[in-house]
Length: 124
Image 1 (cartoon, one colour):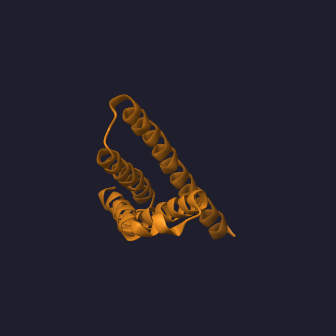
Image 2 (tube, one colour):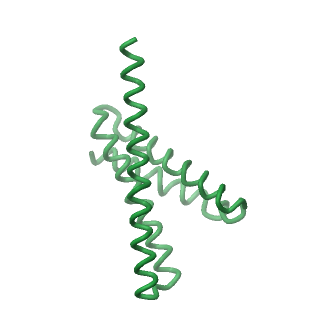
Image 3 (cartoon, helix red, strand yellow):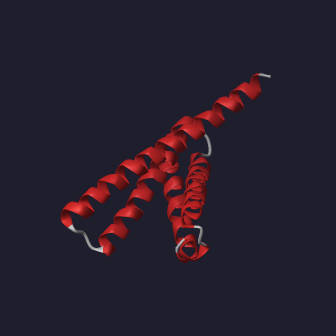
């Protein structure tokens, strides 16, 4: 019985961590949109900014999870980065209703998110 409670608390922690990483993503994307509006940034700069935001959010999720888990931090960071990517993919597909745009950068985005999460876990 006690192990189920610990497992449930762990899942809630991971979900909170993912939620907070998406809050960070939203805030940073709004800041990027403000810069785009005020500074008239090029498409290439905006793309780099989006990638950096994904890296920062997945890194944060992996870092916090690695701090919570004392063993196999890299593996937990990888799991959080992958979970971040999967939610990002699901939301993107739900909004676009088209797999064509998603398929272009699918593998690259996966490795960016998973690698950033794993790096965050290793650094923690």
